[in-house]
Length: 175
Image (tube, rainbow, N blue to C red; front, side, top):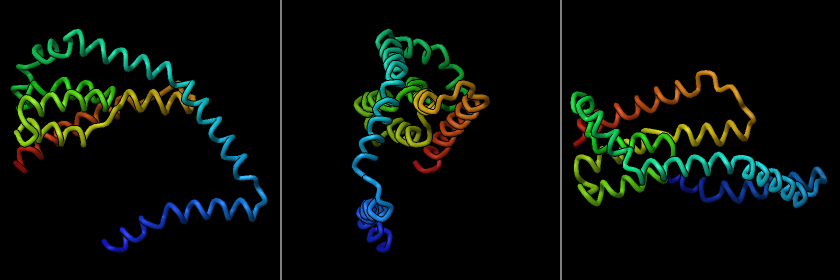
């Protein structure tokens, strides 16, 4: 363990000096290359910005309209059968779109039930076991110019469902 800590202290400076040394040996102007890379990164940000704004607006509308609570109440009989708390349904839905929006819902659960409660522990594990599917697909596929996602979305949804199921099992086993 001590070796990993020692390694992590020196790996970033080593990479920095390696890049500078490599640029000096290959007679490349590293600052100009850095500026060109930053310009390319900025273009990618500008390209994906409309998609991100659309996602954020959709999440805001869903949350402000109360649609998440309506969905949660509608599927409550199903979630009760599966022993999944209906209070966590909005978090599970929003987490697929935005992790920061889901975090705000998690904070609401912490305020209402407490972080050490059954729901607080389960939602904490669920946040770690799931991914922001649509955000990730939008950002990376837009940046790479991928139009046909094939089975990616289905695979991501199956993985997220598995993460939710595992979070329920882990919470019941550990607490």
